[in-house]
Image 1 (tube, helix red, strand yellow):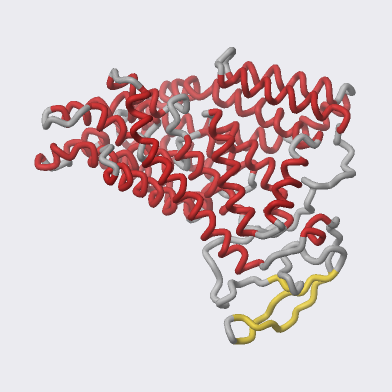
Image 2 (tube, helix red, strand yellow):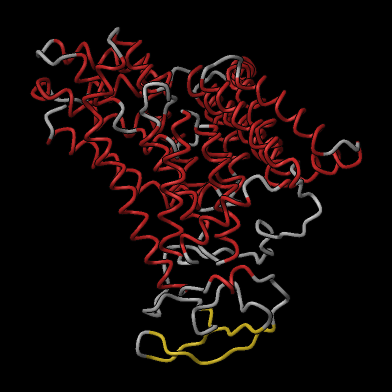
Length: 485
């Protein structure tokens, strides 16, 4: 019964947020609370929630101060040269910008922390997507999938957990998987190329001068344009710099070039492009190298684990605010400017704590995992590596990494050992599902991604999951081909 209720609870949650019948925060709280009552453990709901909140409180604290820190760095212009450099390299071409997103997310992921990766990537790329009217779910989808592949680095978490759970060397797990993971990363770049071509087809390509010019209030008029050989309506924008969504001819299309629309959603709002505004009052050009050095020191300390990450970001945010904005009034203004992001992300993390607390406390996770393992046919025993790789997709999506690697993986390894399958092979297969895991509603970092990019979690899920599954399967197929699994 707990197995069925667990799957029904997860399915209910996903359906409600993807159809936008409930907000993610409400669904993360109310759905597990309801199912906790249904399984007859309503009296223990408070204990489960407190336990879940306690587990995620350090993460929430880290995200709160990290958002303030990187928000201040955006305000003072730390990322402006990066944005301008990427823009000039990409030549305002949507295809190149999407590929640049995958490249930047992959490089920044080397620090092993998903939250930091998403904050830096969105900070640098969000202004470009907004100014060119590109789809923001493409930004979040590509960034999450690229980070998922890179999350398999030994210091990223999953590989270390697998090594600890099965008492093997993390190097023995990761090094043989490098060719397969490289193929997975190539698949992400290919995906970004294809998605970029779709964006280019939908939007056209602006000249660099058009993108760098300031945005003014456009004058909108309806004109007839050719779409897919027939006539359709488009919107011509006139004004300084042309419309943000203009094609080379100055026309913004509501539909794809085939006139049939696209499942890539266009941003609804029309914010000004502030990331490259050279005149904003918060810029601190004289402190640029101080801010760059502070960020480098902060990331280095995080990688070397000199202090807990929440403490590092707390100290970093306080120092950045004090040096860049000595006035108390200015400091309050900067904190207020980023309060929405802080509240949205931290609120989502604590709401997710309710979901994970109930899922774990009621025993639903354990029963679901046992059912899935028990459903493996006896004849598949000699192929437990492949079975583990396939199971890692749904299990790491519906469970935390700790739950999967310390609760389920030892059972899978034991089943494989009975048929002569090495624990190392099972461990390698267990990291295959990480591209999908990074878009799980149980991963706090994904709320940083969608929060900073101003994307609905349901939209991100609906767009990203299929591509993340495909990337994971590519990694698994490559590992089989190379003989690693």
